Amino acid sequence: MRIKLHAGLLACALVLGGCSRQDHAADAESAADAAMEAPAASAAPAASAADAAMDESAPPAASAPAQPASAPADMQTQLESAVATQPSGERRFIRTASAEFRVGDVSRSALAIEDLVAQQGGFVASNRIQTHVFERQTRPSGDGKLVELSTYTVRGQLQVRVPSEHTQTFLRALAQHVEFLDNRNFEAVDAQFELLRQRLAYARHQDAQRSLGDVAAERGKTGEKIDAINARADAQTQRDEATIARATLEDRIAFATIDLTLYQAPQVSRAERIDVEEVVRRDGPGFFARLGHALQAGWRGALDVSIALALLWPLWLAMLAAAFVVLRWRRRKP
Image (tube, rainbow, N blue to C red):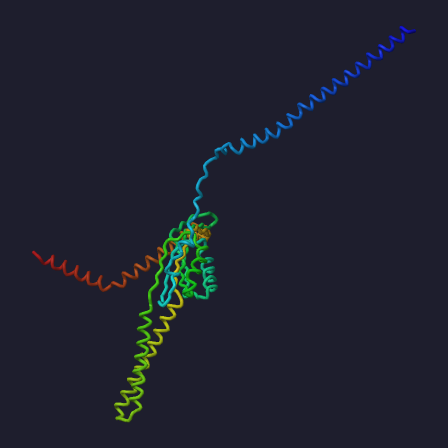
């Protein structure tokens, strides 16, 4: 019994020892795994940080060189000038401008320009649009029709008047309709001396009219009074002309004159029309009918020739008489 008891106790001790060893081994393995995972976890951010640092420090990948964009020229800059914007101060300027440029559609651009002029408080002095056909080809298309191809371009000429202080604003708004600028010209003529000349002329005519009025009111001979009245009328006419000239000059100063020439790229127009010759050949009379008409026309021609010859009977008579005389003369000659 004791031997069996000792053997059972020994077996239990061995089992308990094996279990404790397995637990210690499992704990050791878990600790080892945790120890391995901790450095790995700490190494991952480090690796990520290192990768990020390498990405930041590394030079950017070479890309294809960007081609410089060929942007169109700034039309607003091309249509600007100090002539249109310089302050007048004590001087008065007569501003004029002209430009020639290409547009997409002349008719639409002309209407848009008229709207711009109205927005700036100006007006349109003239608006002319013409179509120039410089090549035309005609080809038969069958069924008695012709196809006509025409190459043409449209040109427009506008003269607009805008307030002088709004000239540059108008030109900047005009730039949106310009596809290609051919030429432009700006002028600012100093008109202060012309204004002074007009004022002096007006004052001179006013004084002359006043003096002649006094002379006409005085007593004197009738002939002298009539001459004075006529001279006063002439002075009034000159004063009126001076007033009109001054007003015209003031208008030219207040409103700039801008001449615009518009044109568009050549266009091709296609049209169909009736081929008259083909229709005549197709719907004309047949062979025998034409032959009958030809015989009739020939007979009428022969009759006309006979009548024309009959009209020359005096000539035939003179020729017969001359022939008779010649024959008699030859017979008498030995």
